[in-house]
Structures are given as C-alpha cells and as structure tokens.
Amino acid sequence: MPESVHKVFVDTNVLAYRMDKGEPDKRRTARARMDEAHTFIVSTQVLLELYSVLTRKFEPTLTPAQARAVLDEVVTLPVVPADADLVMRATLTAQGHQLSIWDAMIVEAAAEAGCDEVWSEDLAAGAELRGVRVVNPFAS
Image 1 (cartoon, rainbow, N blue to C red):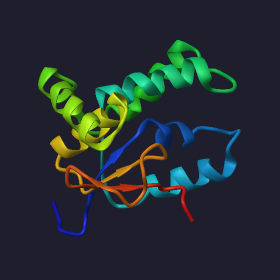
Image 2: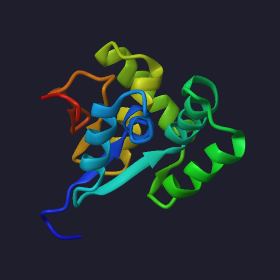
Image 3: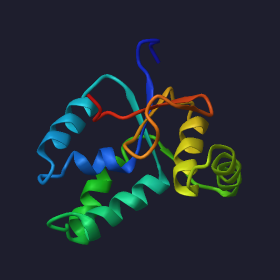
Image 4: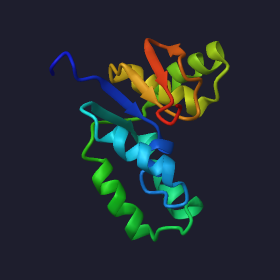
C-alpha cells in the first residue's frame, strides 16, 4: 500500500449519514470523505449496528432486503471480526479510557486492523487511543 494512503476505520454513524436524506449536510460530507483515497475498514459490530439503524431508526426505515443490499456494498471493505480476544481487549480499553464497551470495541477493531484513524462522531475528536487518532469527519 502506498505511504500516502491511510487506513481509516469507519464507525456506523459515518456510513449511516451517507444515506440520510434528513441530514443533507452530513450526507454530503460523509459521501465526500468516503470518496477520498483511503483504505476504509469496518468491523462486524459496525455491520450489525448499521443494519439496526437502517431498519429501526432511519426515517423512513429500510426494509430488511434494502438494508441487506446496503450491507452487501459495505462488506466489500475489509471487515474486522469480533472474537473473544477483541472483546477482552475492549474491556481493558473501556476501563482505562472511560469508554462504553461499544466504543472500546470500535477502538480495538481499528487498532487490530492497523488503522491510522477512526472516523466517528461518538468518540472525542483529536484523542489518540491505542495508537489510533480519532477524527470527527463532520467537524468544521
């Protein structure tokens, strides 16, 4: 991989905003940022959360078949699987950084994948956790 290409872990909210017609500014930003020349990575947790958001929280909600079609596109990215070791590391990260276990799982998956950044609205932008820099792609 060329030096100029960063590995970026993408949190659920960034992927959901790419489709959110109710948030046109965030939709535009998410699409533009995901068009940048990076290697994007997700985890099984992100896939599950995205399906849930699309079928339960999105306005209007997508049908399960529509949500699966979205996931069919997302799974073309590298996916970090959740396993017992990842969960146990996340418990330590959650405790050490006062994070929810879900946010700690995101951080640990990003670290496991060797990501330079994790793009998320839910974590403290600018923080460096487990060697991964947190970026809020929607911040000005």
